[in-house]
Image 1 (cartoon, rainbow, N blue to C red):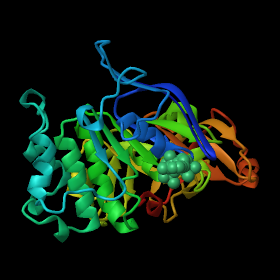
Image 2: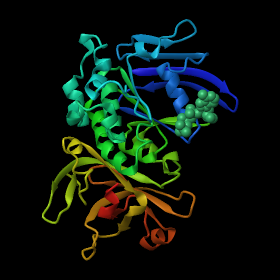
Image 3: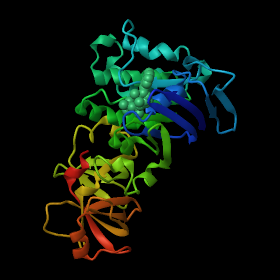
Image 4: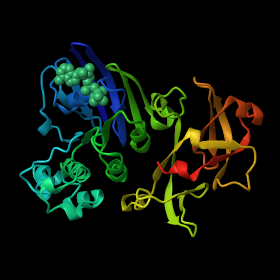
Length: 366
Ligand SMILES: Nc1ncnc2c1ncn2[C@@H]1O[C@H](COP(=O)(O)OP(=O)(O)OP(=O)(O)O)[C@@H](O)[C@H]1O
């Protein structure tokens, strides 16, 4: 599926000018600084903002195009087969959780009810909440119910507008596995608005970089994190994303992560042991480049358990006097290490060289 969006909207100090075709599969993140126009664009896509001079159309894989808005027509949100979740949970307070969940489901034609009530409550871990009144939910629980309600609309497209930003850090960590399970297990494309790089790295397949009302670039997550000047890295530095399976906890209390070719050990946390992640085939691990060191050979007498053979693909020197070394592991996955120019010179690093990457277990907790 593809989404075609053309819009030109002018406000007092802001212009949104977009003309793009977004591939719709997996999770597409709309990423950019506060005020760059992410929410405005999402509202135009949804039909919440019937901006003039806009065209919004969804193209099926078969090539069939459904026009949601152009100069001649405007299909309102409730007729667009879109599920939406906002920063604040927007549940109907006079209905129970179950009734909220069934609200959109009952309006969905039977032939389109691919996600059932049981599917949604199991996926989001809300079975024990369904008979509660809405006012008896915590913020995190209410947001999971909001996700369930949007999902049970059985939409063609899920639009999530910073769904985690109103939650505290701990609750965000708890919900993230459910969001990532939603993204992996449900075959509904998601557009996620966020200004948090870690959410992009943990959830997105593709990133739309926005800046002052413009789309600057659309690229895959893999490409985005290979750019030393990626806007994802501005606040927190370069990071890599590894895909693997979470395994059992060993006799030393560490949990394995990886695949046939690479294995890392992490400190188990509520998140790594969350049932939502345990059931997933593929989990993502985010590793900050500054938490990765390099050695020319394995180091036997060191507290760092995670030592993996790798090969250097590229050596970048972004601004700020640090060096980012791009390496690939034995399974082909890319990992970035941030070191000092002095270390680079001392180790005489060069492209093609075989080295060992050292990753502190504590770096894997994020
Ligand atoms: N209803 C409105 N009326 C006038 N201006 C608005 C309105 N809503 C947003 N704006 C302005 O439009 C611009 C884009 O806002 P928008 O909310 O789309 O940005 P954003 O990237 O989603 O930001 P944030 O991450 O802070 O939510 C900003 O300059 C904002 O002040």
